[in-house]
Amino acid sequence: MEFDVVLQQPGVDLAVVRKVLCDVDPAALVDMDPLQPGIRVAAQLTTGELAGLLAEAGYPVEAGAIRPRPSVCCGGCGG
Image (cartoon, rainbow, N blue to C red):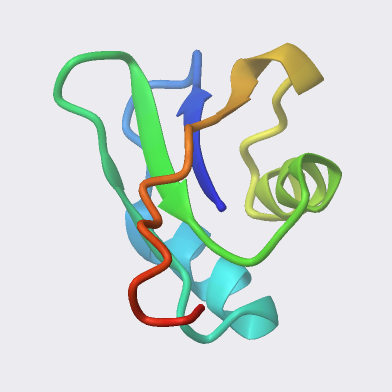
């Protein structure tokens, strides 16, 4: 799943967030969103799991701050 996460804390340490996410999903990706105050996450997680991992990384968020992005999967690879 891909998520937009609105964070109120300035200066997010992406390395810390990436470490916590990759401990659960080694293929997880995280980066800053240049168009909003937050991050983008791609990982095989539920919204609740992501919220728990962000809290573990030091960035607790309300459930409404995590917005799943629409799938961009075309189905062409069979996945």
